[in-house]
Length: 358
Length: 228
Image (cartoon, each protein chain N blue to C red):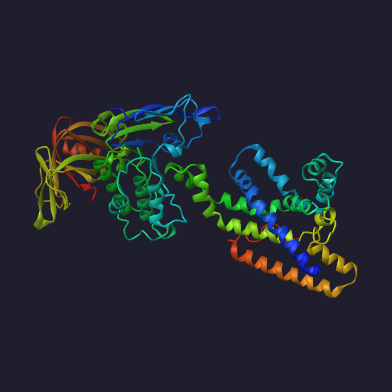
């Protein structure tokens, strides 16, 4: 089902800085991934109506059946109901946190996605309501900015590298909040980032953009099991495993997850059995052993089949299939020889797994 | 009413009306100049700033010519209102508006340019149209600019001399303002009265400048030159 249908053309000095066609479904997170200068922010601004009509003249955009841009129509940004959160929170400095939220609430065009008080709870803002933006930390301010966008009841939520300026802890916290929002509310989210780690933790689809053009649009699953993509994009270092919560191991403060016929242990996480959970595995956190070891400080050993080996300058990139999902390991060519690894062979991967905290 | 009190009243009236008129007319102009990237806007700024560098008598001279019933502007005014512009309070007001325009526009330009475009973009994505954005974001964020611009305009108009001398005509109760009265006292060697006015103006100007200093952000205090 298509919710957004876009043919966007933005020209500057007679050259296109954006010239691409794409569609978006009415739910889920679509990540827009590409190097800086690829036109990611321009694309979002164009969707939001912040690019002057004159320089995106030949664009065509329909959202939920309404035409926002065409040869004869141009809906102003203020009439589009698009939530846009930038890298910087852009809170109104003369208004308190509560007033910032009320500003958005008073101007929404449709039934609210969440009530103001629900947004306050969701983004943990209850203690900040009376404060002014200049007294907030980066993470707090960005939470307010997200809440403000959500309270405005957007038909489309656009996030332009919202976590870039934040510290590690705030990042994880906000990433969880965004993911949770997408799971619970029916609002399509476009998430712009150049951080692959962020994208694989929350995205449902990935659109690769370069030089103002979306060159590839895939589900995350398709991309993370595409060997050619994985070998070409070695710098994207991290893999994602889609798992399910099996049970809590209370006495050891661990949670057991199911991955096909195998299981994984992670630090305790407050999810009920059966819940889906994405586990992030960084390439640098994967090591290979010939037989399953019982004597290691590493908790998790997964049986995998080697599907691809690429050797280069003393290093070997090994792509492993584990229960139908793919992870990569980067080992030295010497280790590869010593372990005598070949394609098709079964090997054991010791991994350190991290997840989005609850 | 004593002659001095009447003069003071005319001066304050002129300064207040000039300030109010500029608040209404020059605010949109300053907003346009601050936001527009057009060549026309860049071309306009030197014209608005001209009174900052020209001797007031130059502007006064040309205004006097324009106000004359022989000129189309003066003639049209006479036709419309039944009395000539030259040597009238209205004429004085027009002169003050032109001469004080840069003193109002300059601080407003600084204040308006201080407002990040991204903040206005955020407001428009939240559903605020142009007027709404101006009212709810621009006005509150440029409050200080308005205070500085208004104070500067008021004080500057109060101290105006050159233009008033050329187009005012020194008519008591109509166009006789403080600076001209002071000039008259000195001419007639009435130093006691001259001191009263001069010290009064010094006191007022100093008070205004202190107020401005207090209102201005560090680094942008006291724009333009002191009221002449």
